[in-house]
Image (cartoon, rainbow, N blue to C red; front, side):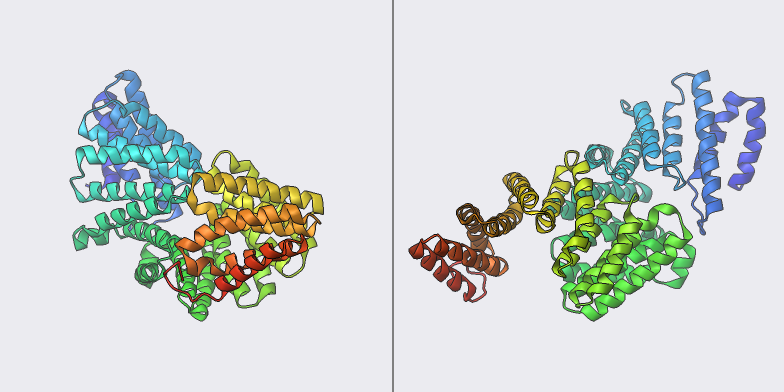
Length: 513
């Protein structure tokens, strides 16, 4: 019997005997709301939404009539309602999941624990979408703990446990914990690929989602060859015309994969192919955005950022600036993460071109957005605020610029004290501020800042000579010039000799070289 006929019959029976036929009708509605179909469309989504809404309303009525007997079923209906990709906001969907969690939080029944795990996972997904990553991560950890406790049995449960790991990886990556994100995303994709071939094909969209997350972590770790191999494989699957026809939601994923592929190709020394991939990504995003819904402008803006970076490195600054300006307009009020990156890229491009006056507005807007999020998520927004303040130092008047530079140094010191990965950022801000202070007529203050920056650079050079050889040599050269102006000729000569030795050192893995 088809679900539509079954629901129609159960509705008639439920009117006569609601307590007897109400629960099977609600279960049929929940099943209908979870049926995606072979051709997802706005009409199909509307039918799924209507079925989920009716199921929730029916279970609420049953729960009032028979208190406590339908809590697990009501929670399942709320989770199904939150899973439908309709026009509800992520915040309202997260609230529905939290309500479902409240109904089954203290249960020991396996069926209820399955609902609890899925409710926690979906709540984490929606909170991550809202930017509430700190709230999302404990929920995702809680869902993983349930899967470890009960063990996934069928294919559907194995896929859901893998998706739970994927959410954990997304949150870890957003918090800047790239090593943890890479490890958990590897495990998630491995679980999906451990499925039998036919089952894996049935759950291919989940596999694509997990592979894209792993590729992002590989790019962040600098493993571009491995990431390129993975995204090329996903691109081949997603770009098949029949697949795109049967799975329209895969279109934005394909565009996202093309942007990542462009980054990998550029890093691997093929800028021409990278430019073609980035152009295709932008073109596909434009089609996706034109088809709606509204929230997809952020994806197009991100693709434009990738293309603009390639254009700028190719010397096509005017075209890069146009793409960045478009990205700013698309991301504003839609995606603050992409907005700040676009604003700072645009400002730095204008500063490099000598257009400091026109860089002031994007820098000021970037600083304002970073400050709005800085206390809520410091590990994400403090590094961006440091970058924005460094740009402010370049475009502001002397006193205001130096104040921005000092604030950037203070923030960078805090970041480096909490995480050694930011020592490179701290060294950059110290050296740049030292140069600015020297330009303002205070060589003594500049020498103190440069000494501290050089000390940090020496430590970094000892660990990775190839990456830090030229930055250390430049900082030593600046310090030597200032010491000479201060009349400390012996120190200046010694520092200049060290700069020359570092600059002419042969690249290699041995720091003592």
